[in-house]
Amino acid sequence: MPIDEKDFVKLNYTGRVKETGDVFDTTYEEVAEEAGIKNENKDYEPMVLAVGSSQLIPKLHDEIKELEVGDKKTVVIPCEEAFGKRDPSLIQLIPMREFKKQNINPFVGMPLTLEGNPGVVRTIDGGRVRVDFNHELAGKDIEYELEIVDTIADNDEKIKGLIKVYYGNPTLDVEKTEIEIEDAVAKITLDKLAGFEQRSVQEVTLSKFRVAREIYENIEEIEKVQFIDEYEKPEEEAETEEAPEVLSDDEE
Image (cartoon, rainbow, N blue to C red):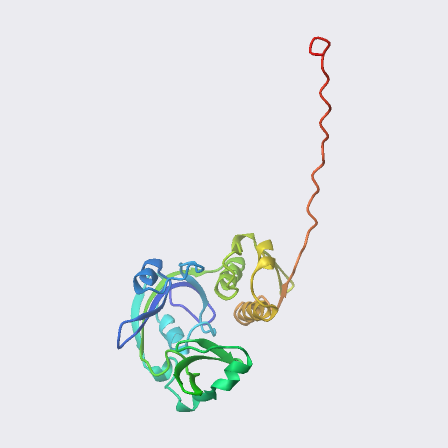
């Protein structure tokens, strides 16, 4: 049965730079380990994908809609349809003194963010630091190996899958997430461990926004998403006092 727009699927994939064969992303743990890109905080398993959403580059969605469950396909995507061509205007020379003002010692390969734009330090020459704000895969043709593992019909499973993709907290147990859907509103209570993550409020808020957007844009029955934070007072254990030991006449 063909896959349609807004269908939810479980997708395995491996992405490579076509020219070099270097793996930059995969859902297979053994492939990531062999390529030297394994992330200990990542669960390697099929990702949950809403077809046509912003989760993948558009060309991949077009290819997925031509597949069925169990199908595998290798797709080559030119840079123009992948992460774009390299833009020389996105390479900036920043005076070293700007880094020193913030007590930052830049080094080649150092990732940084300027006005919300991620970049990487390419060279350091005297008093100037050359920072590249192009996507790391810009200008490169990409090859993806795709496998459609399954489709998802249950809305709770769809939502839990999106939380795993976007929320990004490795300590969160998604199976302890509670979901209630009523009157076109999805109420989500995350696992309690979600409240003990080492991320900024801005990062957590952005993750929740991304999850919510994918839900109401791709699940027809839902128009609004609410995240509910619950903090429950732990039950106090009753203290029991041990009775003093009484010696018998023989023991005195």
